[in-house]
Length: 67
Figure 1 (tube, rainbow, N blue to C red):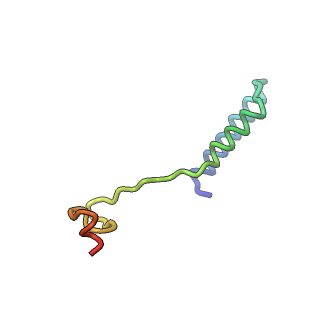
Figure 2: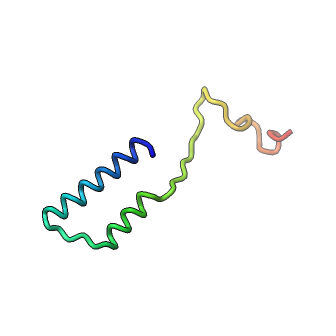
Figure 3: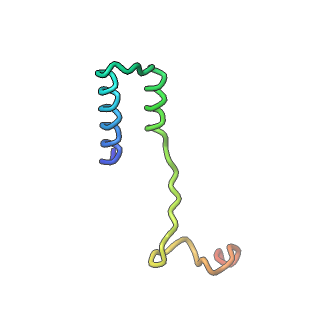
């Protein structure tokens, strides 16, 4: 678990605890939805920079890159 994810989980926990202390009603369904949202896998599309090498030569058409 990365530091960013740990901080996000800690922040969510503190917000929920603060809401409970202040008397704000939080339905269990809302908590479940928040936890599911935090645990979703995210796909990241990375575009290589000019100094990085990608998969093939971007100047050639796809059919010429294989050969």
